[in-house]
Length: 323
Image (cartoon, rainbow, N blue to C red; front, top):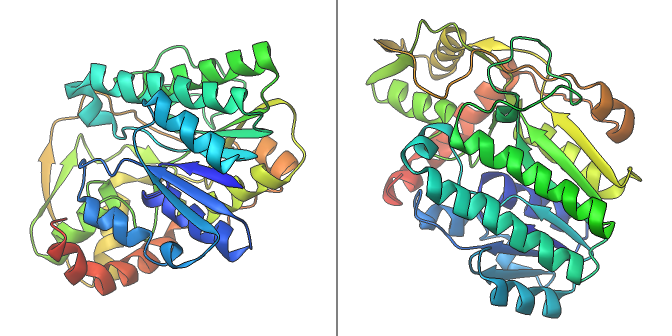
């Protein structure tokens, strides 16, 4: 049994489907937070809910009693902890809310995992922990002591909590630092999804700063390959891995790429740089290649057209759900 927290979200539901297709028994824990339309997340699990090897647990990771009941009944051997409040910019407006969910909630999931003898715990971390570093590509051994947003700080804190549980209790933990994941089911407020919607409807695209920030955009299928490898391969009791494409794309180039895929000319609205944004993300994949056999296959030039194809197929349904 594999338990996926945040299992109805973008990455979580995609992982649930991948694991079920591989014959695993899977449970998803999700509270269907209204950060974006819960109907979208329920639709994400529509296929899974028709399978006998799948269980949905609705609830909050901060609810210790709920976790105790879920772990006692499900008895998961492996846990993929993806549940979190997401987003750099919203975290600036609600830092205490982010700390409550992402730190307290992570501590509760770690406690339950330790009590119930989980034999592998994967923590969904973020490239945001690297802060404003311009020392690229980012390597896992770099110090990450200066997060520049509350969201990044909570992910750093989650890694530290996970290490403490490994050190004190021997809980086997791998922290996976995701680099700007995109693809089908991506959250509606994330840049690629938002830009696609705006360009497709002829609206202006907000470009913060000079459009010269760069991101290591990672297609969802590549991220799933990395997570599954971390679940299946023999790994050290404590490990941290970057999961990215190890390539960067400027913001202005990304907008143009989306425009070409839609066959529409983007209309840009230049705005000041946003607090909490970082100038660049760029993953060094040396450790992930060595230990996970991780080898990303979908460059952004292929991934964006795939996303646009999905978006066009789903756009009507998404509008009905209020996205």
